[in-house]
Length: 74
Length: 318
Image 1 (tube, rainbow over the protein chains, first blue to last red):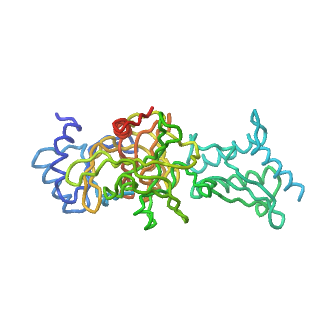
Image 2: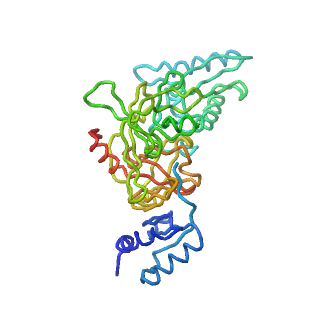
Image 3: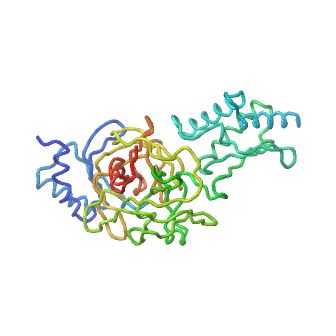
């Protein structure tokens, strides 16, 4: 069983090469849940991410794909 | 009623004058302002002096008492209102008899504090700005000071040259120093820092001065920053190792970044806050350097990575 950190390291570069993927990382939400989040800009990127995850058997309940706007310089 | 105005004026003057030990007026001002900070979501704040927040008091107009505060207008708007209510309750004055104003005394004397709007000459000429994160002091040369912010603020995203002029971005746009060094942004590879430093000539104000203590942030911990656009905001660290693409004209990848989310629903940062130092509420340690965001989450370089680069440049931080 791979840890979230192992999965993160394994998928980081391939996913960041997908157009529309804006980020990924292990996050903690307000309730203290810890999961691996992948941020995408649009539905096309969402589909491409899930295709990659399914093919690589990376799917886990602790992995979420969320839609976020582009990161801009502040 | 005029007597009450004079009494209130003398009371606040007593707070301003202070003394060897805290007087009754100082205690009132401190308690009232701390309560106002807390009501406005800045609980646990220890970075702003309170008893020296009032920089002027006088009778003006048609029997009104004016109190001038030194502070960021975005932050102090609500703070002033809370303080005025307390003062009216205490002194028996009515709301319309007490005026408050915010006068950042730093600007007329080219003095600045961390959180000020600054930028490379190209940004300043367009009225754009980032934030002065904090100061560095040269241990060997007296009065040789530096400021820390982002590459994209002080070096115009790799376009600037060492020695380029830096400005405080406000109406008169005074010159404050020169670009000293920066970490180039690599558009085709991975980055960990959006960092630059500049020389600084002028007076320094405020309590957020130099970095005192650097450490890694902890997942879920509460942090604070003071930015030029949104002032002081409080957030929660939601990730310690986020990888992001950031729009520098082209999409640039940053690895091992902190990600922070506001703890009260409002945005932790907005454009113009880049360069802000991010500090742990628990102990005041420097944990990050703000540089990007998406409207919901804010991204920051990790504090120890920033400190390591400063050390490599020859500037030690404690």
